[in-house]
Image (cartoon, rainbow, N blue to C red; front, side):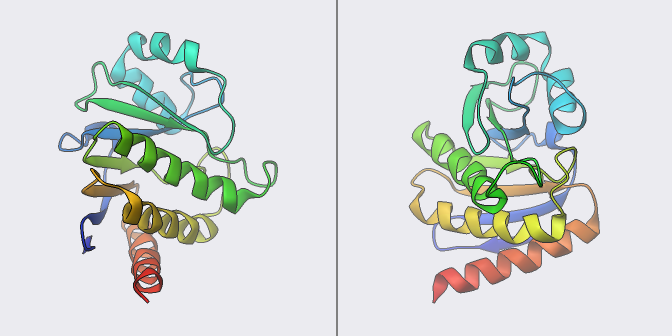
Length: 181
């Protein structure tokens, strides 16, 4: 699914974050130390190779809501933006920190002239943020951040199944509608 905005588009697809060959950068659902783990972070580190961990080491630790950037090494993209999402029930206020992740990643990409960026559903895996609560926050943050972005032309939500695509599509439509008023 693709939702066109005035100067950019938001795409919502089922896929593998490490296989987004047409995206300039992808977002890693990182841990504070920016090291390999399970889920998205593990998949990205495995595909990128050990050079990614070496590049991350001097940037760590990061706090919830923060984003940092590295090269992508063996991934098909130019950059990886690492975001630390909130752990649900631990890092407060969850919604504010999650929104900051998306906004920070887009702002950081924009300062580098990056035109396209793919996100996983941050914090919804090992960090236990319920998708039904995370999706409205994520979609609103992306829509708002794209208004301020100068170089960003496409943001893609890369999700694990069609049910999630439907949730993110509905929430993106709501967020874009709210922003347009």
